[in-house]
Length: 216
Ligand code: SF4
Image (cartoon, rainbow, N blue to C red; front, side, top):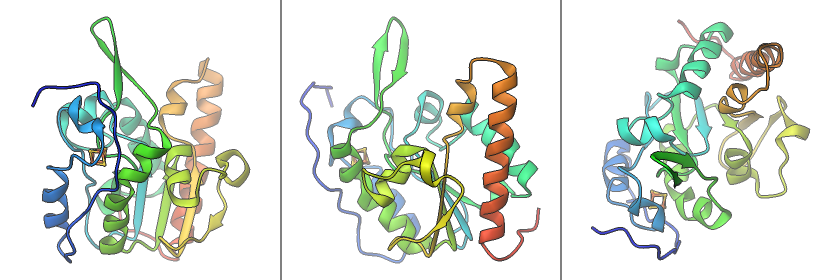
């Protein structure tokens, strides 16, 4: 289908099913907002259906868009390292994004990430709600402001609530922290290391909040 510049967003309509595979399959065809037009494919969540922890980020990036998998680029790699250091096996958690298509703008030959707006986040939220309904994680970890605001609304501030165990209608326990891509944007090695350690502390708090350890 040819890409157009027309922008629109209406709520996505996941099927009413208890099968995560069916929801994932339906999401592949989603055209509820204009973001699908310039993306390669839908990047749906991945992980065990009975995962005790769900991690939700903002949207797929350049690598994820091509691979069709969440958190496989540089931010995903640093997140994997932090998860391991916190005692969490990535294979045991469900990983997804608030928005399932890559939003970008061209700059030369590169595709530069663009932050999804509130209408796009709202359009895509039914997919995240369906994942939450079916996986029923004990704890939801919001990675960055977009994910946290998709759950708690636009007035939520990660800087204020970071690392606290909160609750919402979407999950009994929710913890917000930074998006791992913010670690990559630190100006120098010293601040990168400091922020990485804070991120690991938040992930340890998340593991503790599930009320049980996860075997690695
Ligand atoms: S970003 Fe979400 S709502 Fe928009 S087309 Fe993609 S899957 Fe559908």
